[in-house]
Length: 297
Image (cartoon, rainbow, N blue to C red; front, side, top):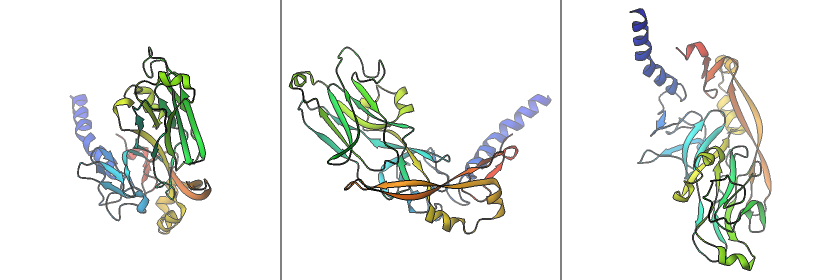
Protein backbone atom coordinates (compact mmCIF):
# COMPACT_ATOMS: atom_id res chain seq x y z
CA UNK A 1 0.00 0.00 0.00
CA UNK A 2 2.81 2.43 0.90
CA UNK A 3 4.68 1.68 -2.33
CA UNK A 4 1.48 2.12 -4.35
CA UNK A 5 0.80 5.49 -2.67
CA UNK A 6 4.37 6.63 -3.30
CA UNK A 7 4.10 5.67 -6.96
CA UNK A 8 0.85 7.66 -7.33
CA UNK A 9 2.43 10.74 -5.76
CA UNK A 10 5.44 10.58 -8.09
CA UNK A 11 3.30 9.86 -11.17
CA UNK A 12 0.86 12.72 -10.47
CA UNK A 13 3.64 15.16 -9.58
CA UNK A 14 5.82 14.53 -12.64
CA UNK A 15 3.86 16.64 -15.18
CA UNK A 16 3.74 19.56 -12.74
CA UNK A 17 7.48 19.33 -12.07
CA UNK A 18 8.23 19.10 -15.81
CA UNK A 19 6.14 22.20 -16.51
CA UNK A 20 7.82 24.07 -13.65
CA UNK A 21 11.27 23.20 -14.98
CA UNK A 22 10.30 24.32 -18.50
CA UNK A 23 8.90 27.62 -17.22
CA UNK A 24 12.09 28.17 -15.21
CA UNK A 25 13.99 28.37 -18.51
CA UNK A 26 12.21 31.56 -19.65
CA UNK A 27 11.54 34.99 -18.19
CA UNK A 28 8.34 35.23 -16.12
CA UNK A 29 5.25 35.73 -18.28
CA UNK A 30 7.00 34.65 -21.50
CA UNK A 31 5.98 31.70 -23.73
CA UNK A 32 8.32 28.76 -23.32
CA UNK A 33 7.69 26.90 -26.59
CA UNK A 34 7.07 27.30 -30.30
CA UNK A 35 5.50 24.05 -31.46
CA UNK A 36 7.62 21.29 -29.92
CA UNK A 37 10.75 23.46 -29.56
CA UNK A 38 11.60 24.90 -26.14
CA UNK A 39 12.80 28.52 -26.38
CA UNK A 40 14.95 29.30 -23.29
CA UNK A 41 16.16 32.78 -22.34
CA UNK A 42 18.28 34.60 -23.66
CA UNK A 43 16.13 33.61 -26.67
CA UNK A 44 12.48 34.59 -26.62
CA UNK A 45 9.37 34.84 -28.76
CA UNK A 46 7.80 38.11 -27.60
CA UNK A 47 9.36 41.53 -27.11
CA UNK A 48 10.84 41.73 -23.63
CA UNK A 49 11.44 37.98 -23.56
CA UNK A 50 14.85 37.98 -25.31
CA UNK A 51 18.13 39.70 -24.49
CA UNK A 52 18.59 41.48 -27.84
CA UNK A 53 17.33 41.33 -31.42
CA UNK A 54 19.68 38.48 -32.41
CA UNK A 55 17.87 36.22 -29.94
CA UNK A 56 14.35 37.10 -31.07
CA UNK A 57 12.45 34.04 -32.32
CA UNK A 58 9.65 34.28 -34.89
CA UNK A 59 7.07 31.54 -34.28
CA UNK A 60 5.31 31.28 -37.66
CA UNK A 61 1.74 30.20 -38.44
CA UNK A 62 2.80 26.53 -38.64
CA UNK A 63 4.42 26.73 -35.19
CA UNK A 64 7.97 26.55 -36.52
CA UNK A 65 10.58 28.80 -34.88
CA UNK A 66 12.96 30.92 -36.96
CA UNK A 67 15.69 33.35 -35.94
CA UNK A 68 13.86 36.58 -36.66
CA UNK A 69 16.87 38.36 -38.20
CA UNK A 70 17.80 35.28 -40.29
CA UNK A 71 14.46 34.13 -41.64
CA UNK A 72 15.81 31.17 -43.62
CA UNK A 73 17.22 29.48 -40.48
CA UNK A 74 14.60 27.29 -38.84
CA UNK A 75 15.50 26.48 -35.23
CA UNK A 76 15.34 22.78 -34.33
CA UNK A 77 16.77 22.80 -30.79
CA UNK A 78 18.38 25.31 -28.43
CA UNK A 79 20.80 24.20 -25.72
CA UNK A 80 22.01 26.28 -22.79
CA UNK A 81 25.56 24.96 -23.28
CA UNK A 82 25.92 27.57 -26.06
CA UNK A 83 24.83 25.52 -29.08
CA UNK A 84 21.70 25.18 -31.18
CA UNK A 85 20.61 23.09 -34.16
CA UNK A 86 19.11 24.80 -37.22
CA UNK A 87 17.94 23.67 -40.66
CA UNK A 88 20.49 24.63 -43.32
CA UNK A 89 20.03 24.35 -47.11
CA UNK A 90 21.51 21.61 -49.30
CA UNK A 91 22.99 22.42 -52.73
CA UNK A 92 22.05 19.75 -55.30
CA UNK A 93 22.18 19.27 -59.05
CA UNK A 94 21.17 16.43 -61.36
CA UNK A 95 22.76 18.01 -64.44
CA UNK A 96 25.23 15.93 -66.44
CA UNK A 97 27.13 19.06 -67.48
CA UNK A 98 30.68 19.63 -66.22
CA UNK A 99 29.88 23.04 -64.78
CA UNK A 100 29.77 25.03 -61.55
CA UNK A 101 26.65 25.27 -59.42
CA UNK A 102 26.72 27.67 -56.48
CA UNK A 103 24.37 28.28 -53.56
CA UNK A 104 24.99 31.64 -51.85
CA UNK A 105 24.08 31.45 -48.17
CA UNK A 106 24.17 35.20 -47.68
CA UNK A 107 26.05 37.35 -45.21
CA UNK A 108 23.47 37.33 -42.43
CA UNK A 109 25.58 35.66 -39.72
CA UNK A 110 28.42 38.14 -40.18
CA UNK A 111 27.46 40.60 -37.44
CA UNK A 112 25.73 38.01 -35.26
CA UNK A 113 26.88 36.22 -32.08
CA UNK A 114 26.51 32.88 -33.94
CA UNK A 115 29.18 30.80 -35.70
CA UNK A 116 29.07 27.42 -37.44
CA UNK A 117 30.38 24.87 -34.94
CA UNK A 118 33.76 23.53 -35.98
CA UNK A 119 33.46 20.67 -33.49
CA UNK A 120 30.02 19.41 -34.49
CA UNK A 121 29.75 20.04 -38.26
CA UNK A 122 31.37 18.58 -41.35
CA UNK A 123 31.28 19.87 -44.92
CA UNK A 124 30.04 16.92 -46.99
CA UNK A 125 29.64 16.03 -50.66
CA UNK A 126 27.69 13.13 -52.16
CA UNK A 127 27.68 11.85 -55.72
CA UNK A 128 29.80 10.63 -58.57
CA UNK A 129 32.91 12.60 -59.64
CA UNK A 130 31.84 15.44 -57.39
CA UNK A 131 34.08 18.29 -56.25
CA UNK A 132 32.54 20.53 -53.59
CA UNK A 133 33.96 23.76 -52.20
CA UNK A 134 33.26 26.18 -49.40
CA UNK A 135 34.06 29.70 -50.57
CA UNK A 136 34.12 32.96 -48.62
CA UNK A 137 34.68 34.90 -51.85
CA UNK A 138 35.06 34.19 -55.56
CA UNK A 139 38.78 33.57 -55.18
CA UNK A 140 38.99 32.27 -51.61
CA UNK A 141 38.28 28.60 -50.85
CA UNK A 142 38.28 27.63 -47.16
CA UNK A 143 37.39 23.95 -47.53
CA UNK A 144 36.40 21.24 -49.95
CA UNK A 145 36.51 17.57 -50.83
CA UNK A 146 36.25 15.19 -53.80
CA UNK A 147 34.18 12.01 -54.17
CA UNK A 148 34.93 9.40 -56.83
CA UNK A 149 32.60 6.75 -58.28
CA UNK A 150 31.52 3.29 -57.34
CA UNK A 151 28.06 2.61 -58.75
CA UNK A 152 27.84 -0.69 -56.86
CA UNK A 153 28.14 1.04 -53.47
CA UNK A 154 25.23 2.89 -51.90
CA UNK A 155 25.85 6.30 -50.37
CA UNK A 156 27.10 5.97 -46.82
CA UNK A 157 27.19 2.17 -47.01
CA UNK A 158 30.92 2.02 -46.36
CA UNK A 159 31.33 5.33 -44.58
CA UNK A 160 32.24 8.68 -46.11
CA UNK A 161 35.86 8.34 -47.18
CA UNK A 162 35.89 9.51 -50.81
CA UNK A 163 33.82 6.84 -52.59
CA UNK A 164 30.49 8.48 -53.54
CA UNK A 165 30.86 10.54 -50.36
CA UNK A 166 33.53 12.79 -48.86
CA UNK A 167 33.87 15.06 -45.86
CA UNK A 168 36.17 17.69 -44.41
CA UNK A 169 36.38 19.76 -41.25
CA UNK A 170 35.55 23.46 -41.37
CA UNK A 171 37.58 26.47 -40.18
CA UNK A 172 36.99 27.88 -36.71
CA UNK A 173 34.82 30.99 -36.29
CA UNK A 174 33.20 30.43 -39.71
CA UNK A 175 30.17 32.67 -40.28
CA UNK A 176 30.00 33.22 -44.04
CA UNK A 177 30.43 30.83 -46.98
CA UNK A 178 28.96 29.84 -50.33
CA UNK A 179 28.66 26.23 -51.51
CA UNK A 180 29.90 25.26 -54.98
CA UNK A 181 29.64 21.94 -56.84
CA UNK A 182 31.77 21.06 -59.85
CA UNK A 183 33.06 17.90 -61.56
CA UNK A 184 36.50 16.51 -62.34
CA UNK A 185 38.34 18.42 -65.03
CA UNK A 186 39.64 15.12 -66.43
CA UNK A 187 37.83 14.59 -69.75
CA UNK A 188 37.71 10.83 -69.13
CA UNK A 189 35.37 11.38 -66.20
CA UNK A 190 32.72 13.25 -68.18
CA UNK A 191 31.21 9.97 -69.34
CA UNK A 192 31.09 8.75 -65.72
CA UNK A 193 28.90 11.58 -64.42
CA UNK A 194 25.65 9.94 -63.36
CA UNK A 195 22.89 10.68 -60.92
CA UNK A 196 22.59 13.70 -58.67
CA UNK A 197 25.30 15.45 -56.69
CA UNK A 198 24.98 17.19 -53.32
CA UNK A 199 27.06 19.45 -51.09
CA UNK A 200 26.15 20.72 -47.65
CA UNK A 201 27.27 21.52 -44.14
CA UNK A 202 25.78 19.07 -41.65
CA UNK A 203 25.69 18.06 -37.99
CA UNK A 204 28.00 15.04 -38.08
CA UNK A 205 26.11 13.13 -35.39
CA UNK A 206 22.89 13.45 -37.42
CA UNK A 207 24.59 12.50 -40.69
CA UNK A 208 26.16 9.34 -39.30
CA UNK A 209 22.65 8.11 -38.42
CA UNK A 210 20.99 9.32 -41.66
CA UNK A 211 23.54 9.06 -44.52
CA UNK A 212 21.00 7.87 -47.08
CA UNK A 213 18.28 10.40 -46.17
CA UNK A 214 20.01 13.51 -47.51
CA UNK A 215 19.00 12.84 -51.12
CA UNK A 216 15.36 13.35 -50.13
CA UNK A 217 15.92 16.62 -48.27
CA UNK A 218 16.33 20.29 -49.15
CA UNK A 219 17.71 21.11 -45.68
CA UNK A 220 19.78 19.25 -43.05
CA UNK A 221 20.56 19.97 -39.38
CA UNK A 222 23.59 22.17 -38.67
CA UNK A 223 24.99 23.19 -35.27
CA UNK A 224 25.64 26.84 -34.41
CA UNK A 225 27.67 27.99 -31.43
CA UNK A 226 26.18 31.04 -29.73
CA UNK A 227 27.03 33.53 -27.03
CA UNK A 228 25.67 36.88 -25.88
CA UNK A 229 27.38 39.93 -27.35
CA UNK A 230 29.38 41.53 -24.55
CA UNK A 231 27.67 44.89 -25.10
CA UNK A 232 24.21 43.33 -24.62
CA UNK A 233 25.35 41.32 -21.61
CA UNK A 234 26.70 44.40 -19.85
CA UNK A 235 23.29 46.09 -20.12
CA UNK A 236 21.57 42.91 -18.93
CA UNK A 237 23.98 42.44 -16.01
CA UNK A 238 23.65 45.95 -14.53
CA UNK A 239 20.80 44.71 -12.32
CA UNK A 240 22.45 41.48 -11.22
CA UNK A 241 21.68 40.40 -7.67
CA UNK A 242 23.44 38.17 -5.19
CA UNK A 243 21.39 35.12 -6.17
CA UNK A 244 22.55 35.46 -9.77
CA UNK A 245 26.24 35.82 -8.92
CA UNK A 246 26.38 32.99 -6.40
CA UNK A 247 24.88 30.22 -8.54
CA UNK A 248 26.06 31.03 -12.10
CA UNK A 249 29.37 31.86 -13.73
CA UNK A 250 29.91 33.89 -16.90
CA UNK A 251 33.05 34.26 -19.01
CA UNK A 252 33.99 36.35 -22.04
CA UNK A 253 35.22 34.56 -25.17
CA UNK A 254 36.37 35.73 -28.58
CA UNK A 255 33.92 35.46 -31.46
CA UNK A 256 34.59 36.56 -35.03
CA UNK A 257 32.76 37.97 -38.01
CA UNK A 258 33.97 37.49 -41.57
CA UNK A 259 33.60 39.71 -44.59
CA UNK A 260 32.73 37.87 -47.79
CA UNK A 261 34.35 40.63 -49.85
CA UNK A 262 37.87 40.61 -48.43
CA UNK A 263 37.86 37.60 -46.08
CA UNK A 264 38.90 39.81 -43.18
CA UNK A 265 37.95 39.02 -39.59
CA UNK A 266 36.91 41.32 -36.76
CA UNK A 267 36.77 40.15 -33.18
CA UNK A 268 33.44 40.33 -31.33
CA UNK A 269 33.65 39.27 -27.66
CA UNK A 270 30.73 37.12 -26.50
CA UNK A 271 29.68 35.89 -23.06
CA UNK A 272 28.93 32.26 -22.13
CA UNK A 273 27.34 31.37 -18.78
CA UNK A 274 26.96 28.11 -16.89
CA UNK A 275 25.59 27.00 -13.53
CA UNK A 276 28.13 26.39 -10.81
CA UNK A 277 28.82 22.86 -9.59
CA UNK A 278 25.88 21.51 -7.61
CA UNK A 279 23.32 23.65 -9.44
CA UNK A 280 21.32 23.23 -12.63
CA UNK A 281 18.89 25.34 -14.64
CA UNK A 282 19.22 28.46 -16.76
CA UNK A 283 22.38 30.44 -15.86
CA UNK A 284 21.19 33.46 -17.88
CA UNK A 285 18.24 34.14 -15.55
CA UNK A 286 18.25 35.70 -12.11
CA UNK A 287 18.25 32.73 -9.71
CA UNK A 288 17.92 30.47 -12.75
CA UNK A 289 20.41 27.98 -11.32
CA UNK A 290 18.86 25.97 -8.51
CA UNK A 291 20.22 23.26 -6.23
CA UNK A 292 19.71 19.81 -7.73
CA UNK A 293 17.52 18.70 -4.82
CA UNK A 294 15.07 21.49 -5.69
CA UNK A 295 14.62 20.37 -9.28
CA UNK A 296 14.36 16.61 -8.85
CA UNK A 297 12.10 14.16 -7.06
